[in-house]
Length: 203
Figure 1 (cartoon, rainbow, N blue to C red):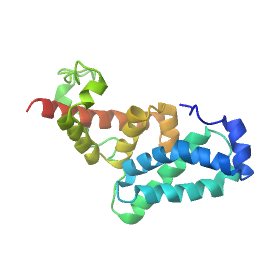
Figure 2 (figure 1 turned 45 degrees about the horizontal axis):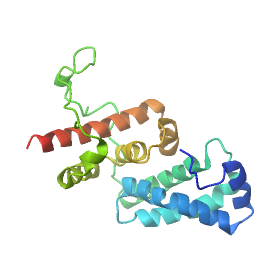
Figure 3 (figure 1 turned 120 degrees about the horizontal axis):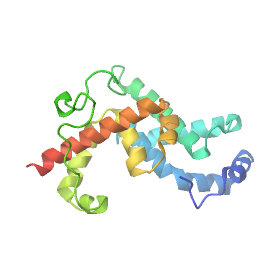
Figure 4 (figure 1 turned 180 degrees about the vertical axis):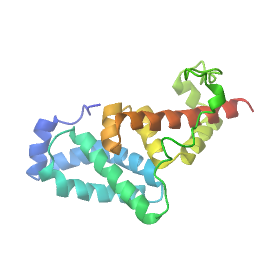
């Protein structure tokens, strides 16, 4: 998703390489909030700002070597993701960035038919729009709590896709996972949130 306030990458990158302060100010204004948001999804609130700052330093150092195999935005967010994952491993040597993709299925197998279709489909999120859903303070807290319990890469995937509207292709590049694994991460995250909503609405 392009940022309408920014020049194209073709215009912006040469300016950044020429140390144009206005261009630096533009990308910081455009991307810093998203960088913090992604960092928070992976490492939590306490050090998200610090991770974003570390990522900016890495961006500035690596920019001359940027090969443009993705957009500037995707490349910057991949640096944030890598910085956050490295920091998370450093903070806790035993942390798992995500559950095994083969083990611990989040969907109860009893809810699926042999052909992998739903035997007992999940309840609809709501008849209203997502905006109307989020109008409920209790439901918002429920979703926030569910997000907090997700493994970091699941949380990052659902944050980038459902909250920031990034494409799956961009998300997979940012998180450095295959497309199939990216879809598993997103599916598991959505399923956990769905289950939390069902429990909330069943109370």
